[in-house]
Image 1 (spheres, rainbow, N blue to C red):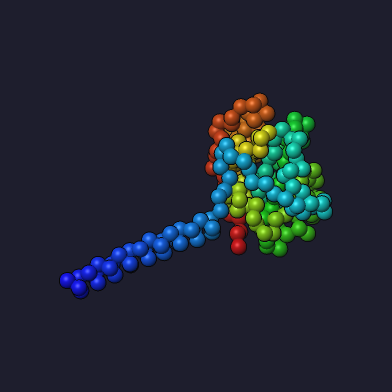
Image 2: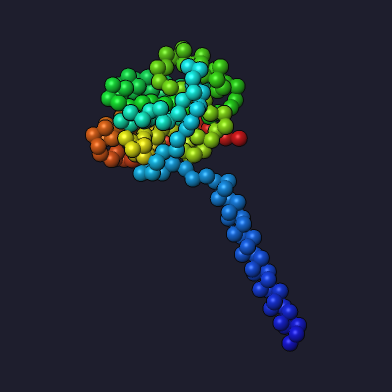
Length: 207
């Protein structure tokens, strides 16, 4: 009987410790996987990110914008490069409508660091903000996975759209312009439909 009770007690102790260890593992996993941007929820804010203009930029600086277009992009990716002219066009077409376009680069390879960003911005005559986050924190918070990956923040800075710019890397073959449709909907006080599309491009190189 005594032996039986000892076995039961040992079993209960193991079960309790096992639950505790499992809880600890879950807690650790939660810390390693930060919550990412979700439709209808506030878009993660960035603060004091350096731009190619040599200045520090924050989301709070854009408080007067009717919408903010966040584009995770980079210099070396051929897909991102294919969309650079379209980003320029989006900026020019929507700037006067109250939309601020902010491009953010979080890759840390030499071809994507600030010197290369400045050169690229000059070559392509970017007039929108092009920011660098070597910590990669803002990319993780948004859950950005590829370049380009876009997020539209509405007037309340909630995420209204996320995904692709359009349906084809080749501008001549693009038929559905998801991002433009989403921006038009937000500016009209409506919800984009679709509000989420599948992004495609080069995978972001998180460290």
